[in-house]
Length: 299
Image (tube, rainbow, N blue to C red):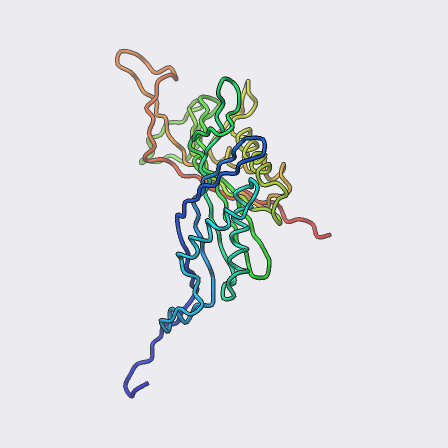
């Protein structure tokens, strides 16, 4: 360093690089004539010893983001049987950490589009699919060079609504409060949730269906009478509680439940009888919490 040159106080911290929104379509053609179809949107993130790229401007040993994109397709091809989105993400992460010496860990995030097999004349179609609803299944998998694998699963945009058995009252009031107390209202939400497994699952598809069903059941209650909700917060906790108590493989579950409002409407020349509403998605309340398992007793 020449005389009079000030030494920089900057240093490199955490760093990673990856590829986002890699779209992958995969068809498995089964021996019985049925096809299985999946569409994924993949984000890859690699943690690697690439300090020299930032500090020296050299790219020796770098796994280019274009390479990461191509690996998403290659791994999809290598999976010779239908698999869960979690299995695909795990296989992709393992490929990165085993193939490239400088990569210490890979985070793979995958969204699965809600394509569902259609029925024609009451019979499931061999190769026909349609987008069903707005629900998007998600996973986030972290694979380390050491062999450790952390799996989180979940979904977003599961839209739920119950037309009664919901209220909201007893909240703090001051000069800024206009909302009236009520024991009767619609409750609707676009649910996003993520849960973490203890060491993975034997059948991710089965666990997904099981957890999703528990969440839906807790939201609505029994078919005839339902279950009363004094707040979105209470319902959110009961949904998470049902998963923790009913699914021992789940460590914690995070639920985000915006309160999508259906405001009472008084049509011209008539009165409101809990029958006509004005739907609005903005602004909306945002309620989020993590429901976790109590610390397990040591064996």
